[in-house]
Amino acid sequence: MVNRRRQAAHPELVRRALQIRLLLTDVDGVLTDTGVYYSARGEAMKRFSMRDGMGVALLREAGIATGFVTGERSRAVEHRARKLRLPWVFMGISDKAKHLRLILQQTRLCPDQLAYIGDDVNDLALLELIREQGLTAAPADAVPQVARAVHRVCQAPGGHGAFREFADWILELRTQTTEGNHGT
Image (tube, rainbow, N blue to C red):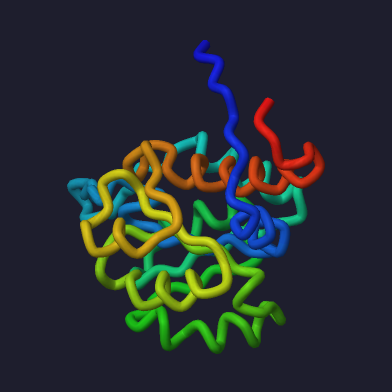
């Protein structure tokens, strides 16, 4: 196991991490590798990372909820959301940025309490809105416009732990104030 020395984070990122109450995520390209499998009967199947699921559990333990924001309407996504016991699932959302107002109304949160991870151009406007006050990320294989617009580009690609990496980063940032903002 590699022992990485943790570096102190920028105080503004630490401050933002402490305010996060909901991490929203795109599904296809973040929680999946963008591939879709079809059975002989036409059923669409998606592959989800179990490590990302553990990220949801770790966030929940820290008082941070998780929600899906996706343009798709999919039974596979519904099943995954139910399995993870997600309080917020927004499906069939074609304009994610426009939907932000409804998300804030339903969750009773403010923009500075949100984090978002997305991978493609349909996530860009929402990422830019949330980046102003919250925290944002993209998987390693995100399109270049998205990678340039976020606070953190994960080392992991979509469907292979990018969500977990973002969750771990937020949780790590939140511990830095209790450790005096220095590396250990």
